[in-house]
Every structure is written in C-alpha cells, then in structure tokens.
Length: 276
Image: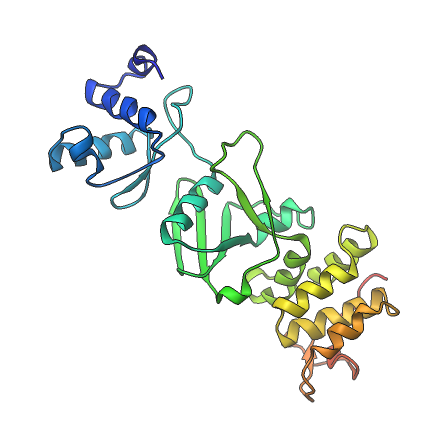
C-alpha cells in the first residue's frame, strides 16, 4: 500500500501511519493498547484514532477494545467485511470450535428460499446475540460433543481468513429436525430429507451416521420414520433403530399435535405425510 494511495482517501497523517504500520506488520486486528507502543501514542490519542477510523468505516469495531483491520483499503474507502470473516475472528478470539447452521445454510444448500441476514453459530464457548453492520449473529453454546460433521469453503471473492464452516448437508438435515423449535422447520425438514435422498445429494448411510452420532432420541425416531418411508429395505436403518432407547414414549412427527395413527416400530405419532 503506497503512501499516495492512502492519502487519496482523505486520511490525515496519523491515520496514514496506522495503515502503513498495519500493512507492514500484516495486522488484521488491533486491540486497545497496541498502538501506544507501535505508533508512540498516548491512550487518548489511540482511543481517538480508533474511534475515528471505526466511525468512518475504515476498520470494524467487533467489541469494545477489539477492531478488525482490512487487508487493503477498498475502493471508496469504506470497508464492509464478510460476515464469515467476522464470525471467524469472533470465534478465534474466544478459542471456540464452531459451525454455522440455520436459514443461511438451508438456503445455501438449496432447501429453502428464505434469505436471511441472521447467522446461527453453534459453538462451545459463548451464548450471545450480536448485531454488527447489517448482520445479526446468534452464538449458541452447545457441548463440544454436539459439534461436528462440517463443510469448509471459501466464499467467492473473499480472502483466506473468511472461511465459512457450515454444518454438512447431512448434519443440516438433522439440525432442521432436532432444532425445529429454533428454526420452525417442521414438517418441511421431512420433505428436505426425501429430496436429498431421491436427488442423491446425500445417502441414507450418511444421514444415519450423523443422526446416530449427534441426534437426540426424538430426532432419531422422527428421521428413522422418514428414512423407513423412503428406503425401507436399507440395512443402515437397523443401526439407527438400535440407537433408540426402549421406551413407550411416543413422539409426534408434528410437535404439539397428538392426533394421528401410532407407528409402533419407530415410536412416533403419524400426523404428517411426505411425498414418496
């Protein structure tokens, strides 16, 4: 980044010094106190500088005292970082394992047309809701054992730090059933499973492996019933069936509705139908 290119953005000498230093050190984040020694500033000068850079959209305030810095200044001078970069840096700072699920992932895999600016992040460190720029991030803390079966990819046009970690397609289908209260995805999720298998996007074996490892009893019963409707002779169903505790408790396919015939094999109340 050359001095003249920085100067054209209308920044003052101190701001130019900041970006020259950040680029030379390859700094992508800055914390309160970092600039006191690096740029020989006092605390007030540092606070004023970070405030002005953040206010002008040249850096992004992630939380008080922690800022993200662009790899290079964008055309027009205002930086709008990827939501995946924000999630990545947020989770890295907490040292958290995580994966993204919910409407953004459902849409990405082609199961939902719902466009959303809300990101649901399952992680093992923090539960909180954060609004940054036009995005809403919902960090949901879960046990580490519930994390896994992910797909990593780099969104088009993003830098190496903007890696997206999604639930895999099989895990997404489990998420849609097991966390239906959060997402409002029943009974649609049953049709998604049918589509995934019939269109050969996911195999019965893949779904069974994920459900056995990460699912709870209710989701195992519901998904077992769906898979039995689609591929009743599949040998993997025995593995899933063996994972379900022996109990007389019945699980309605559509929650909070106990009207319907009883399927004794899977222990569900059949109050919905699926295309088969």
